[in-house]
Each structure stands twice: as structure tokens, then as C-alpha cells.
Image (tube, rainbow, N blue to C red; front, side):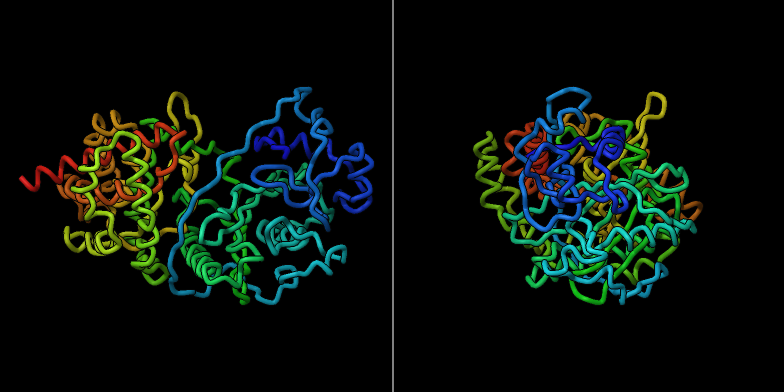
Length: 484
């Protein structure tokens, strides 16, 4: 299947060179087949960063890749797929009425059957219940602009559903527009909770609850523009289970997504911790989030360590001695993970904060400023919960730094985090450097577990595996010292 680069320049080239029809710039099947040399291809749902062509009533597969070769500046080389986004389930929180205009009666957000294909207003964007017309109206309302003419547009899937997983997945879709108005966004990203054909599944319903939880978090983050969360154009929690959408800015327009295998360079890591400090300090000062976000339940952690046996076998095949797991096995339990996440703040005598929960490199977008890399956005706030600041601190350092950088720079990174936390908290900062160091050490086994379970079966991604192996050794050595 033909892959399409996600670069802005390339998407604009697609918009310029796509065939035009008499229907507002949308693709028409007759034009598709005739103008593209008779090639069969899917008009609506090419996967993961590939060109998604709307208005399709059948499932075609692209067979004549030479048809699109002219779109690659004369090159016949096909770009590779972007990395898929991983995620795990979350838990329900209170659904608070929001300020984004939840209109639960919109026809454009209702389920539609195959019989509705071809009818008026049937331009449903791939993997969602959103029509182009509805989206344009929401963008116009948010920006106080009247969008009269329907623009040229393309859609791209930014995440690939894990069909082999027992959990249903959300759809994340980028819509790129061909308009020339600089006051309008060149592209937006849509996130919907669950694929439509999986909504009746129990796990699908669970993910819809998770989606409403994420909506609540975004409503809180929008009150604080300096937070590194995406800007939200519209939030819709639909009344019908499994439906809904978040329309947000395309953060890829202002930064580059980082590689979870390579991790983060030190300058980007320092900036991530600066943003984590701002999040934690803001959540201490403005506590309305505490009515929106519940703890993650034991079942969440049970799912996380559900394949521990497979993970242990994988790392033993990669030169980790079995004795390491004998001494660290107590950490691979739902009870340990849940207790650490929910009770550590009280154990340390510090207040709870809003924890992001997944400061993976793949959730971080950076931009170049001079010689340094600065964070432009942090995405995927699905796993937010109430907890200890050290969970974000430890995960960010352990997941994203090479073993050498982690050993050499953890102390200075902790001091930098404390500096920014004290600056943002002001005179009432309840944290000392010593408390932060103690908390970081407390969460090392916690971060090891999540790293090990994420890195299993990633043999081709050697840097990721090496970071996990180094964490296992660190936690093992600490456990042996405690026993002695």
C-alpha cells in the first residue's frame, strides 16, 4: 500500500495536484479511476499516514503505485510509514459540563450506515463520525470566521489501531486544507474515542469513558495557555456511547515528533522537565482538576503487567539473568503499581499533583531554537491522574535517556526540575531537593516495570531494549543492597 510522507510541504503538494471535481473539490469516483489511469485504490481509508481519499463506497487497494510517482518530485521511492502511537486503557472520571458547546443533537455526529453512502452530507472523515461540513462550521465558529467555499482537503491516519490487542482503539486523523487564508489553520487533528465497529464491545465502551476523561483534562488545560498541551478548537462528548470528537491544533505544524526508540537529547529532556514542573505547580495552585480526574484503578495496572511471563522470557533471551527477575518480581504486581501511584504522595508528605502519566518521547514535539531543542507541545493526556510528581519525573528520565546519560545527568536534571518547580510555585513551594531525590528513587521500580512491559518484543529497537535492561540492573542492585 502506498505510503505518504506527513510533511507539510508534501501534503500541500498533494492538495495542489489532486484532481478537481464539480463538487467543492472532493474526489469523485469517475474522476479517480479515469484521471489516475484506471488504478484501483481506496478513496477513504488508506492507513497510517497514507493518503486518505474521501467519498468511497467500496474498499479498493492501490495497485498501480507508479500513478503517484510524480508526486514525489520525480522520485519513485516511497516514504516509509510513520511510527504508530501506542497507548493503554484509562479510567472514568466525573463528566463535568464544559464550555465548548456540547451539542448532542448534531446530525453530522451520528452513526451512519452503508446505505447512507452517496447521500448529501456523507463526507465522513475516515475513522470518525465527523463530516467535513460539521468540521468547517466548528472551525469557523471558534475563529469567528465565515467559511463559504468548501476547500480542497486530504486526511491522514496518524495512529494505527492495534487489532491484535484485546483493547479497542481510538482514531487520530489529520485533516489538511487547501485554502490560502492565513487566518485559518492549514491542518487540524481529530481524535475520536473508539472505532465505530468496536463500540458495542465492552472494552470499546471503556475507551469511550477514557475519551470523556481526556476531554475533561483538556478543558482544564485550556485555561492555562503556557501549558504544553495542544490548543483545542472544539470538544464534543456525544450522548450516544462511542461517539464524540476532540478537534485540536496540528502540533506537527510547530514541532517535530520525537522518536521513542532514540529517546530525547539532554536539552530537550531539560525542557520537558521544565514543562512538567509548570504542570505540577499549576495543578497545585488551581485545583479544579481534582474534580475531573480520578485515580487509575487496579485493573489498569493489572492489564499493564498482564504479559509479565512473556516479558521475562524476552529479556532472558536478551542476556538478562533470571536472578534479576527473582529479586524484582515483587514490582510486577498490580497491587504494587496501584499503591505506589495512589499513596506515594502521602507517604512522602507532599501534596498530590496532576500527573501526565506518559512522558514518552513520542508524545513530545520539539522545535529548534538556536543550538537547543525546545518543547513545542506534549500530547496524549489520556493517562492523566492524581498522584505524585515523581511519577512524571522518573518516567521522563528513565524512558527517554540512554543508560549513560541517565547515570551521568540525573542529579542535575533533578536540580533543574526543582529550580523550575520552586520558581512556578513561588514562596509556598512544598518540595525540597532532598524530597525530590527520595521520590525519584521511590519511583525507579515503577518506571522500570512500565519500561520493561513496553519494550518487550522490540528486539529490532535495540536502544529501547538496552534502556530497559539497564533499568532492570539498577533496580536489581538496589533491591540486593536493601536485602543486605
